[in-house]
Length: 303
Image (tube, rainbow, N blue to C red):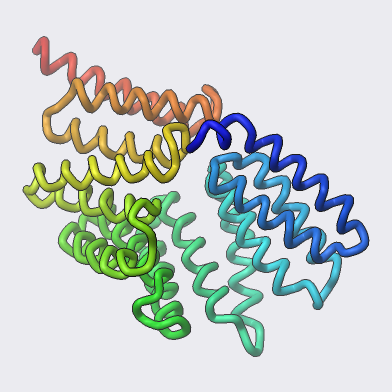
């Protein structure tokens, strides 16, 4: 991320939100749409607390319009759910998503693309709860809906396959995970820029799968390419980078490279502490696992 974004994004966002409130005071639907766009920008740059505030305001403004604002309220609700997932507020996110999915399915003419998106977002929540069977089911439903509405080569199908690969990894179905990641890569290579974050995710999924398929050298190449792409796309302080460092660290530790793995794990923990605070339960869990790896490494050095 450029120095401009790091130092001034907050000021720019706050000024833009205030201008929207004053300029569109008599046009609440326009204000709501602008706030949603600014909220999405905040989410993409890791400013999750501000994103939540803006998304909630957008939802409230659209809902106040009744039936006329229902579709837009749904879109803002899905955006809010994504922010809540990023803030590890899974109960709130799941409730919002299930409400949205129920409303869509009860509609006489549901928007299939919005339904596919809601199912995809729900699969992320279920994945984080380690309910991998349910996450896979929601992901496959989402992919099927996207294919039906948008066609088999649409980038949303690629994203769905990428999400499916992650679920399959945690189900220890490594060959299927590799295949899903490669199919995602074929679609995304044709639809997004070289340094798009999704291209980085393809590399990381392949690295994780190949690490379990007796191809550690190839796996490491994918991990390093994914990490480099992610740094170029997002900068050195984005929350997603912490997740990548954690995943890469686990790969290194599993392949006997304790010093490198622990150092990378420590970097990931420092980033999460800076983002969430030292008392966050997610941070506490990471620190506990890091301590376990340190003890294991010390035992190997001094049996």
